[in-house]
Amino acid sequence: MSPKLFCQSCTMPIDDMADRGTEKDGSKNNEYCKYCYQDGHFINPGMSLQEMKELIGTQMKQMSLPENIIEGSLRALPHLKRWQKEKVL
Image (cartoon, one colour):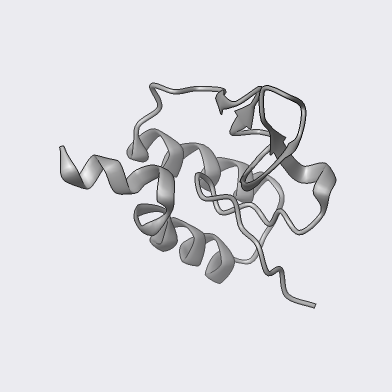
């Protein structure tokens, strides 16, 4: 079964509620994963798109994911909600 929800910051699948980030009130966020978003804000708010590309590329390679999955995630990053604001600036 393919994931339906992906983190709008890093592309991690977040179909499992345990993988989702949290709001200030402790409720689960439906757009961001627990590694990117906690307590209602990004864990690393100053991170650039390029830094995210380097981080997830490294992480995915360490997980021995297929190259086509890694490349697809890296291509998807600029289209995610978190990174859309960078295009406006």
